[in-house]
Length: 452
Image (cartoon, rainbow, N blue to C red):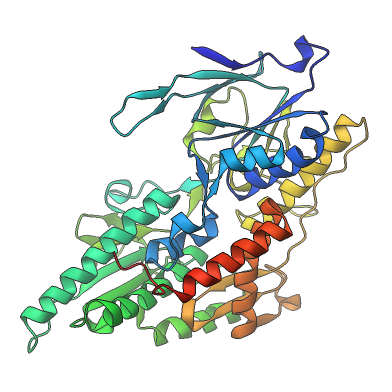
């Protein structure tokens, strides 16, 4: 085992304290960038970012990668390049174990595609450890779900789904050519869970099937040959949002010829069918699970840190664990109390963004010996994309009396701006604008969907 980074500052009074951030998602990358630009460059702290992958992709866009509307290769950020530009270090690998007594995080070996070791297991000493590892799919112990339903957690899984979807469309096109007078049985795509991810993916897949028919699969009649079914256990789609936005969204999905089943609980997932709680068997060529999230299993490897039932790290309003002030958690992996109310903040990108900003300021204040107030979330509303059909925007999440529902071009523009806002936060205005220009020029010269 190789110790790649030295013991904490407590053992060497002349060295700046080390802040180790595990997880380079939207929140983790933003926090590392902000800390590197401030306390890192001034030598007040050493900032280290750890992630299993070498690149970052903004998770709210995964449904676009899965449908082929966005090429991940053009929208990834190299952690090593970001670290060089913004004054922090990058260490690649999985978090394997945390020794809180010694303040040591063990990072797993990095292997190549053949299983050969590229980097050995390493120990990273820390003064403060920040967990920003996001969430994983929660299959709720439904039989067959983990084996037969695809998750959508990262670019690799999005690409896996896209290839399967493309193959399904090719199969449907071939059958349509062979039997032009007699329609063949359709290809069924089942999306389980009608929250934001499920709704956005279902809409994107319908647009994708239409575009694939226009560009490549000429015999395909998408509405007939590629059936998309959205399954939700609650009485309506987008169940945590205002009933008005649910109704409008369901109407839009109907126009897109997406079959929506509400009040339908999934009891089992098989290789070619989904079985409901009432015993109904629904044919399925591809099943994707978007019905819930939980904290990653590796959080159990941090000895003594309290977790809730969703496997999230329980934190105080300063995003520190109650039993160890040197361990922080934020974003989807953290159970952060809601100010002035019961319960925890939901796993949303804007929560992680605001917590990253808060933590960057909190660390700066602590290093300067100043007091730190608790985190307060300010809801900026919720946007759900329906692709070419537009978007839905709701202000004041969960407060119907103060909610404003906006759809159409204004909501679509806001949805697109959210990604640019993320790029501004990690690249700065100049680089983000140049990247936006590059993306626009690329879009003028290529099909609107990935065709292979």
